[in-house]
Image (cartoon, rainbow, N blue to C red; front, side, top):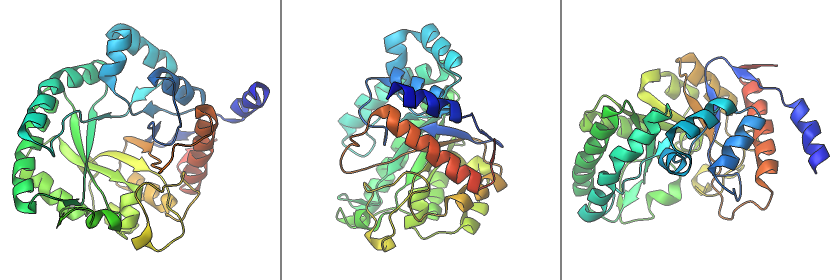
Length: 300
């Protein structure tokens, strides 16, 4: 195995995008030993960034050692997750909000400027009340993040089965999310734009080209099976280029509007992959090369 990996590493040259950063999340990389392994593998196989918990890394290594590791690995932190339960009770929200400044401080200390969360497309709470409460809560989160120079990305979620998973329909389109961002009213709030949700909303590249780059905080990339769109499940994703999503068009459109941030792979599956993290990162490297080459956004 070791000899084969060495040969593969020699064949994987770092491919430079025009501006976008190629990144990994933990989703689709199997059973990692730690964030340190994710950083090491991402660096070895030519990725630019990883999405992880900056505070956990700082707590483990200290700020200086964590920053030195990232610099030596030529890896950035693409985004952290929002460590606040803004969908639940007041007690849950306030408990998380108290921890947000330390999470933001750790991220900022490591040069991370993005924090993301997702919006489920249905809710058991009455939708109007839920939106009123959540608007105030996300505004509070954005205020704290903004003090540390961090943007908040909201991810609309498109799969049809989740639109009726709970009692009341909520938000699942780009325009609805943009309208909500306007209502939140903080300048550091924008979109987390996921190719899977773009596809399950049956959108086109022209929809992306109608956006401004500054409206997008972060991007996720993945692929979908060749089945009717209404049957596509959120936790049944493929690696980029292994399915039917027009990822070349997706990436070209993002490039055309000037998006220059991370494009991080997120492969949600019902069962954890059985292959090793290294094998899965190699598979991911091949996937990124395939779709970025198809989009005309890399040079060898």
